[in-house]
Length: 374
Image (tube, rainbow, N blue to C red; front, side, top):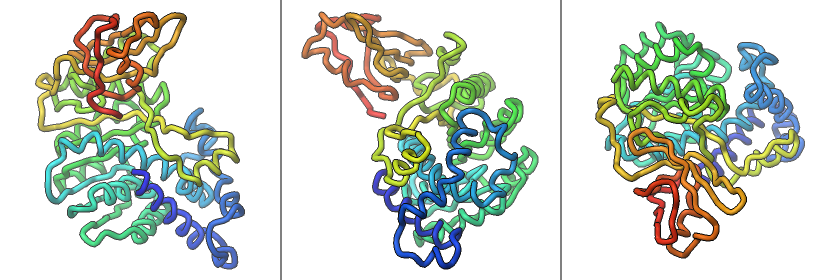
């Protein structure tokens, strides 16, 4: 992933200079601090709007060149890391050979660019549905700078209402449908309607949302509704097909994770300008499989997803696990019971899949092996 992001960062810098700078500025060699300052002007406004509410942004903010260029500079790399991680999680369930992918709300082509790098060794065709022609033109421009001979990107300008998307879905059968940072802009009833359409026209659905409390809890509710309708199964992050135990536990918690990455230099430099920090990338996501029945999931007894960071208090450490047929369990280990045998408990991080067949207390002789790192 880090190698791909490095290459994408260089392409973004070149594209922005050649496309958005005045001709005399575009001719200056390389990428410099003045370029960064020029393009990062809109990042602060976008970042605030995305995390605190969109009331300060116009509805069609991509109509403004300063917002389009700021989004490409900053959010494209961050969201590409989320798409890559989603594909890693989905990889065991993706068929071999050529792929047809649909990206709904494709923006600057984030999913297309990332999927092209991820599936570099096989033919793929990606269709991007986007309602803003300006950002769609940018997607095509970026795609041309990162060519893979056996890959094809088709950009379609479509108003993203369910009836229009349904019309597009009637034309093709897709192996994967992406909906990244798109569903949260719609009412919950419309989100459900769209996902029901997706299940009829694809094998895998990958939904990525901002890892914020409100948007993520909405995604968790959507998950439960889709499973109730028995349209398919959830593959990740959940290890069960029951109702979300975190959603029912209280009205505060939301299921999100952290991607460990090598933060691109451009992101660090912009963060210094606007006061953000991206040592880790926060992510909320769901991956569904329409080929499975929701009550015949892929549960494996004794496997749990770690859904919290370590909770350290006086004399003990606690971690919250989710799994084992829809249970949420807080596991604790007293400091006085820490041993070489149970030291694996210290290495479990949010998102990891671990094996645990005990109760709620880790004893001196217990082991909690990490089966899969997030």
